[in-house]
Length: 300
Image (cartoon, rainbow, N blue to C red; front, side, top):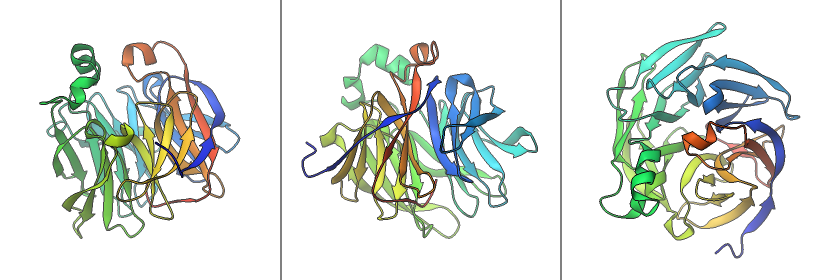
């Protein structure tokens, strides 16, 4: 399955978190959200850092406006919050278009935010239908990715998406790739001058690898590191779907980010499972890290 693929092994970076998500390398620090700790953290390369903000309704996607202010997804109440001094305040309400928990987000260099959502209660669905229900017709409900302009107007950027999750924007700001977790694929769009999306196409079909794409990041060769939410691995995918690299992790991988001084450290958010009842009960989540060969690029 992974022949002729460069293999890497992760090691522990920090432990003692509940469920880490949305890692970002920003201002020489690794930022991330911890769902069930309701906190946003920033760490240096040695794992030292601090809790910067609390998000009562569960934080997820992170990004920054051109003026340096932080944007944060508030999952349960389906909002984006914005940094206001030492606190967060409402920036945009996504509830008209998000049918379940708001989730990951990428913010373009000109300040346009693209945010996905679960679209349905994943834990309830899996309890009722099991994992095979994801790929057995009719499958889970589809949902939207929304676009939030710099004037805070919210609109649908892409509809009929299958659990839109981690996303990357290429350095030229002309294309975006969004992971569709329950479709086991990466889907690309052109970004138009007004920030709208067009020319939808499959960037990579990951079904043959049984890869459920979660958080992801881009390298400088235009390839995407994808956390596989089905098992303990991150895969390096090139357009068309070929696997060029694999990092084996100690637990299931849910998001990843290239960072460090040389942007070649792949930080990986791992946990035993994503089910809220289990993941929120004990601090068994970790951040793992692996040194890879090609540095990070683009956004987030």
